[in-house]
Length: 503
Ligand code: AHR
Image (tube, rainbow, N blue to C red; front, side, top):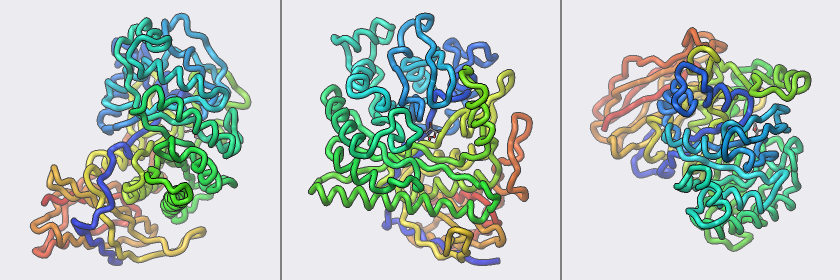
């Protein structure tokens, strides 16, 4: 067996982890809202039509923040259609996904649902087909207490208390030619800056997210970040990053190395932010909102066919990727990358939450169930709270088609002082070798491994369904920790491991 070593030092901290890095995303797309979050006729539906089985799984994940209502959807979103008496709300043609939006769920209903699942809303505004006025009016509707046109409109709709939305996204993927109302970086930067200034006049307590690049392959990356940030640096608080990966050519080793690209993406955006900070002689550091990330590729062909040949359906089956075990490994690796960068990444949203590239799936006349990717998110959200420690890792390495010097083991440690617990998250992404990981906890006297949770499967393509959880975590017998605080833990090839040490 090969060997790796992780040295965990209490004083070498990355940052306190912002729990919002375990956020998620619900878009009006496919069956995310209708048939996912909301299905009045379902046996588990509550008095508001929300599925209780879905809410239970969302609560289990302890999701702190949920981005809404898009995504590409937001760039043609007329928020006024989604408020007030449901029977008066119009149906609209939804351009991004070529569907019909019935507007039965809107701003108020989603706010209510988020309260029920214990999450805060991260609201996006339409800077595609609309602009400053629509963004300001929506903010006034949501956050202003009373005594103005839109706050009084909210009250007349039955919501006396403001929704108190703190985090707002200034559009979505405005660098993408597929975006309705796509703009150049200069056009967008100026519009975002003016919108941000106006919105902060209404409610100075809000935080704003500027659109960064849609992925690392965009021809305008990272010049987009430079231009947009130069225009809007003083008026925004975060810049967004989006990234989806897929194993299109069936090369698992290369696929599992893609989290290194995510890592490089974050480092490049941080460098660009700091460059603009210097250029502008600014004081504040720009933080990052990685507000769309996941594996997404399984459903591509089916979705293109649905949108081209069967458009304008209500809640069609779209982006219903069935995730495999190897997808869960990459999701675990991406979570590790986010934790390792928790000094700058303060918000991150797995895209998405229910039915659409999601950890949670629903059957129309049956139960809600957990996809493979549910588990790494669950573990990170549950045990990854506290302070991320600077990982000092010595691991064997391998090369893949597109990457060199890929460490067999990727890992991060989190110190939860309140619970007196250190949790090490480790993926062995070697497709060939088991690796024994020695965790050296020299600065935590008396620490001992109390639990080793593992996601492993001989079949990389194993997937879950409503009937069967082929991929589910198991607890394996914990390795001994010696007097000096070393535990030698076997990590089988292709496995996600959560090592919980009690201090
Ligand atoms: O999450 C699915 C889509 O991916 C979003 O609507 C868009 O922002 C991104 O391209």
